[in-house]
Image (tube, rainbow, N blue to C red):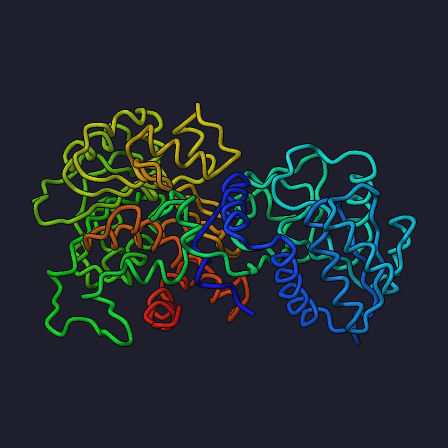
Length: 521
């Protein structure tokens, strides 16, 4: 029962979803027919998840709109399949179609509860109170119902999105259902992919009920301004001469000089591990050549870990930080990654580096970002090649103090426009903004990545992809998805404690070989 690859990449606001549905209804699709189709798909999914022998009694929380109608259709099918169904409708007022389903369900023999407390003896709950488009805070009986449901301790599934969540931002409107699972209808709603919605949505799945692709593209455009990053999205953007697919293998005459040359500038006497992890992250990217500029005091250690890399020592300050970039033939390199583990007092070093490498694609992380925050993002304006910034939330606020960061998607888009860079805002749901206004969201991650050094691995991975000529937004998206999915697979295999940055870097290539080169969508 996986998500549908047909529409999995789309993310919509409430207004966009409303416009798409309106065009479908205007073309002749009856609302009642669509509700029946949605209800049938939900019934199949829920019966498999909550078999009658284990969960014989279900409580349905029903709102006045079509979300409540969807819940009632599911309730009817569950009743006919032998479940005991109890319905709690806090309001007698309802849309005509929803009221019709409620009347028929009562005629079939479902129990109409006189209070939500009568559902406490149920084995599970279905939240059909409010779907997409809610704008007002839940109050009165609606808030009481939600708060009781959250306290009940019963497994609870939400239809479309948990009642009480704002569709676009994932903000809690007063109070919100904390679902065990959410079955999103038709297309992914933007708010479900925001970090602040995570504790409300539980396990999220998409119910593809067959919205026509032309109707979607008419509203969202092609390509759409906002997309989810999927495995297919990644495969379509990987360099075929290196990775290929099961049906189209890599070019047989490929060699190291056709796969780019990445220059890493990272590390300090105190943070030598950051330089090593960044380089190890670059290694599985497929980049042909790797040069690492590191402080002189750690060059031998880095050489031991990276026998294939060219390690260039850099004069360092008394504090063990980089002092002055050595003379390099910058024409040899195709991209540069800078920042991890460079420590403090590197502002002028970073300024000079950005100026000298204006024509090279650049990815900046960690201490490099902090230096740019002190110098001002405007210091990047003179660059002629693309720049990727990879801040976590704290770094983002230092870089862009005037941008509100609660809505991570909008924040990344605005920061990218202001700075003329590709901005990768890290989080449980990483958002990527591009200067042209487009944005992408990585839908999955794992708390196992919340360890020092994980970001260094990502920086090296993105740098290696940039060096192969991949567009900055694609390198950021591929790297983010690859890094997260490999960590998820490693956590499933070895447990969360097994996802230390070293093992993650060592397993990136294995994961890609198993997953990304597979031709299945």
